[in-house]
Length: 333
Image 1: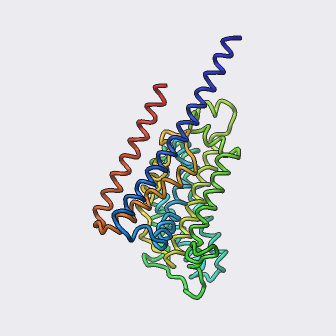
Image 2 (image 1 turned 90 degrees about the vertical axis):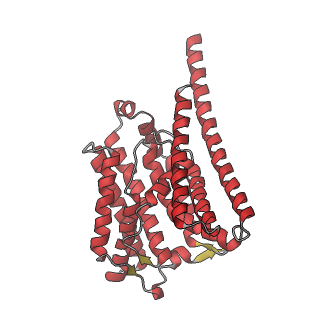
């Protein structure tokens, strides 16, 4: 009886440590965001202004929605390198539906989002059914999506008629001057958080990342849930593509590659482990804000674009290294 009590107490302690470490990581991420905001505010009077803060939030909307999708796959212990180019493909398809085919805006938006879902489904099938490693499967999807975006668009931007008002989806405002794109981002974050923390999808998501083999042995159809999770990621990516197209009022077929690295960095900065089994949506939101604030601050300080890229690359390295240190610390307990 005492052994059972001891085992229960140990399990409870480990769970408590896991929860506390997750909260601590979020606090560290939020503290880092606060430090960046204060530092850039002191270095430039143009940083902490209403227009610039709104601009930061708007730029966060696209990378943030991408990061929300990436969170689901990374929690399973997988990766999706295709989210940047799939986002471009969804933007192009939205342009095709609305501009070339003359469909209503809402149909084009749904079509663009479904394009992302279909790409996610295909990646999920390749990973789950064909047993191709996620890195290779999504790398292939990255190349396919990039090529299709160029072929379908004729390697030319697709512009939306300004009179249609498609740009209002991201740039319009129905809440106190805050762009709709920002509102959509936070609504997507709320939905993502509910899915991850309150549904069976979320429970199986964490189970796959914690111990896939044990999950399989417990009778859960691992392949089915992997495909569903990749489809959820694709759906968020499709939404990001629609927001990008709306923000630019055009679909740029050569834009998107490289966004996947910033999105993955945002996820890791927010405390999601690349080894799987751990992560939160609120952490990802904070991580996305960190990336946007960093990029915006460097731009305001007139740091050359090439050096901005260098700094972002260094941040990605440190984010991954911090995740490695967290994993070592957990495994030593």
